[in-house]
Image (cartoon, rainbow, N blue to C red; front, side, top):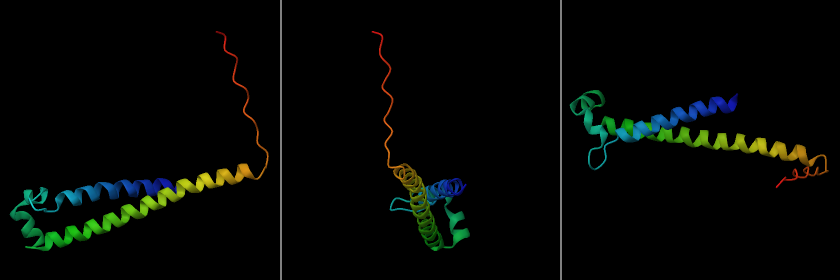
Length: 102
């Protein structure tokens, strides 16, 4: 249940991070230049850069935290599996492969 919620948050953070990075103005203008004067009216003269920079930091942090959490949850299952098989102390051999009829 927790890993499902974290996966959904992780995917949302990924999509928004891609969107926010694409909207930022680079040296050549990027996709942020498509808004033209409308973005200046909404964000102000320099406000779009500050807002997009903050959103990038927020979504990048969310992406990192969900990545680490999902990796921990995935490895925790492996540790539990190893501990449960190690408590018996016995190794059960695999059955022999079936004889081929060539």
